[in-house]
Length: 80
Image (cartoon, rainbow, N blue to C red):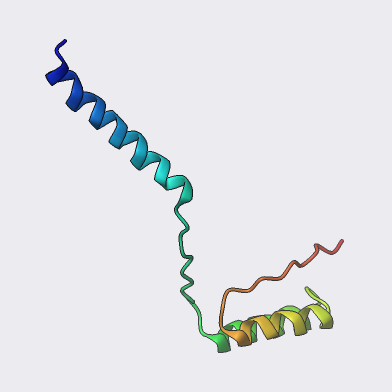
């Protein structure tokens, strides 16, 4: 193979390797879309507390997260 034919192939492979390597350093942004209303979430939360599915402390923690408007980030332990 001649140098004139080999050069475009090598450049193409170098570009491909560079582009795939860039994905490792790509920092994405997470977007959160609420699919229910805050009111509905609070009603469901109250029902979970009233039926004993969660403690008062857990209820207060999750309610604060809901009121902040973002994704809920709490760890609830399973009760036996």
